[in-house]
Length: 158
Length: 404
View 1: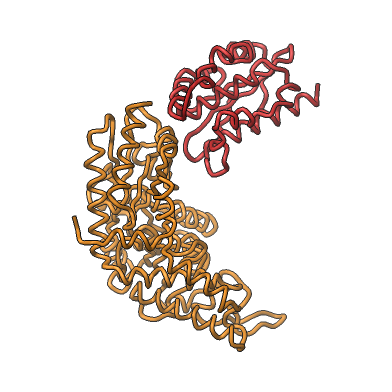
View 2: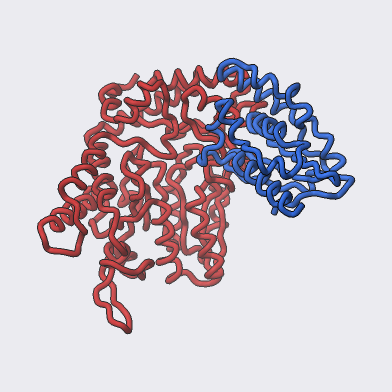
């Protein structure tokens, strides 16, 4: 079962994720600018290659998001100031690239802000909706559900 | 190139014609096959002109539906060369057929301490029902190991089979690699210990004729959807003397002889195992698919599939990092990896180019574990695929590997 990390020494590491609201334009700009599906998927694969895997100390607390085609590790955390941070990674590059797109929308926002986001809209805008279809056992939908359900739950507690 | 009128065959499959027009290529035939027009027409005709419940009423439509339903059973009997149509039980698919044997034969006749022999190459559908049974009845499961070539290592058979072995369940052809399994040898060895043998023919029936009497297996199962028939219908063949002593698994409908408040007596096989209203349209649709196959020269079709598979392998050989998984003699399946790339990425990049392949563990996780793999990419052929499909697949794979 997914838990939300609040240990200060771990959330300090989580806040270091290179992809956040603050860095999104620099990191994700290439995907938006890419032309055609080939360009977009090349950018996604590049993003996926660069997405950091969970370091050992975080991996220990992360949960597998089971899928048929590749396994994703996921960890959620909240800072004392209320910043919501997510780490996720897959060995497959395209799914990792899609994860990077998600992280660029949520990392560093408050739980309430994340709860109010429509994360699928960005996928739709980029023509990536096929990755959210229920027939794809890749867990992207499960990651979105985990992020949003925890964010909404946390914002109600706050 | 073998003599096989591929263009005429292709026209028989409306979905393949449409996919070609849309610029897509279907190479996921081991997961499910496409249906010839005669199957679609049969189903349509059934609902438009014959639909009624079977084995229940004496009115005109019910008589027509029952006749068609029982004729379909005869078609399956002929397809498998079973002795009688009473040996053919309709199920919802191969999975349900295996579960039927596990829950009926297995629960009644297997005792604590008995052993079931499987292979490491089995589809989960031919593992999990036995695991559930083993847990309930205190049985031991043993597995014939797989070699890196995808072949079974039969050198251990003499120790794996013993007087405690009561049942052997084995695929006819492995679903993840397409390797034909040594069913004849295993059946012969099992007979020496009087173990019953179930063969899962799901990946075999679309590519070759099957003769259950020549095989001399006790049970043979397959799914309709993998042999150009509808989904939701499948077949359990069982030797009548076994079916006759097996208790029903599911109750209700026409499987009874007499029901009182104190209990019930059951009718003879096969109806004993067909509780509830069956998938009548599925049964006659499947028979239509089998009749269609009987109009083809199946040997020529199999040779043609081998020709396509060999061509595919040859054209892929110089793609950087291309690694074939499995040895020689595979049936219409090319399972492979590309060094340095995750199978899921290849699958996505193939899909973006309109090529349908399957990626992952192919519901055979114990086999993937035994081979030290987390999954493969699987392209699987049917006789309606053509050289153009193969070339488009190879071009798309080359592009996925070299341009991303």
